[in-house]
Image (cartoon, rainbow, N blue to C red; front, side, top):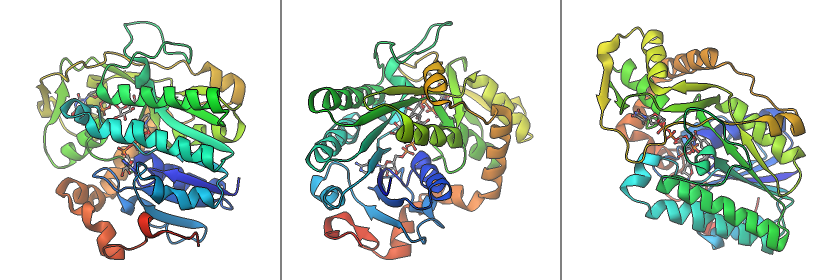
Amino acid sequence: MRTILITGAADFIGSNFVRMMREKRPDVRIVAFDALTYAGNLENLAGVSEVSGFQFVRGDICDAEALRPWFEGGLDAVVNFAAESRVDRSILGAQEFVRTNVVGVQILLDLARQFPVKRFLQVSTDEVYGSLGPTGKFMETTPIAPSSPYSASKAAADLLVHSYHHTFGLPTLITRCSNNYGPYQFSEKLIPLFVTNLLAGQKVPVYGDGMNVRDWIHVRDHCEAILVVLEKASLGSVYNIGGDCEVPNIEITRQLLRLLGRDGSFIQYVKDRPGHDRRYAMDISRIERDLGWRPRIAFEQGLSDTVEWYKRNEDWWTRIKTGDYLHYYDRQYGVGGVVEAAAAGSRS
Ligand code: NAD
Ligand code: DAU
């Protein structure tokens, strides 16, 4: 692999993936493409972006013309992280979710047909399978049954990716991962929201009875699994990725209260999320058996390291909570700086 296009590279998981690639595959040239929506933060790539062999491009995956020069130049791999990713936002309005998560993926797939790439990996989610009862786990063969507009849009993308492999022989891969946590996670998701609220002396809003269960994985483990699938998996395959670690929300909340020295009075039970999936759990035996991958970071250690990271990086999350991070790009590069995709006619 010589050149990789990483879309959604300025987000939580994308930026962790970029950092891991710099460390593990320093010879691979990275084109990091991101629209910098409210969830994208170029500051997440600070330190990496100064390195040669790395180029940041601000652009929208729904804009084929903005993407075309990078495909024309020849890509060994595309890894698509770009998405609208928050379930609660999708309940308020689905349009952006369909645009980026479905239309954006179709545009990437069509470009990959036109300018062949060696591997196209779509980063998907366990939420495409819907919700589990008290027992059982999602397998790759579990029927797709998404319940929120977010997961429906991710499921639609998975089906499109599958169809391009089946119909056109596109060299696709799909990974479906469970809930991630770790450094650089945008503060609207459960763990970073609760950590930063507690650090700021504010209460934490637990939805419903707090007994919804998620399968938690450290973002570093997720990124390593994506790399293994990208490099080793058979084309057309789908792999579940998970932490083998089911925890009810209220248990995470109690662990965070303990780690941050707060008591139960900081818990505020609030109205439940409409259509709230009750339980997710991933069967990861296929990736273990075929590719020899297993998660390595134990949840208690990973959670306590993550809390320490947020303590050390108060400036970073304060800029997010106040909205100041939205100006980072312009402060660093001026309006129209770095490579604006529309103007990116050549690949330096
Ligand atoms: P995020 O919401 O933190 O970031 C999304 C990123 O995509 C941002 O940088 C944003 O600027 C960019 N983006 C959005 N629309 C774009 C567009 N039209 N064009 C270009 N860039 C655009 O997401 P995340 O939590 O880091 O998740 C990354 C991916 O992993 C998503 O595809 C998500 O569905 C998937 N995933 C996430 C989790 C999780 O627990 N966070 C678990 C499994 C899978
Ligand atoms: O399972 C993978 C998915 O995990 C990803 O595909 C999504 O992109 C990602 O956002 C995440 O979705 P969830 O809805 O599971 O994550 P969230 O952090 O929003 O919520 C986790 C659980 O915590 C869920 O049961 C809802 C609950 N919750 C969440 C928030 C933000 C609360 O109780 N209070 C809150 O304030």
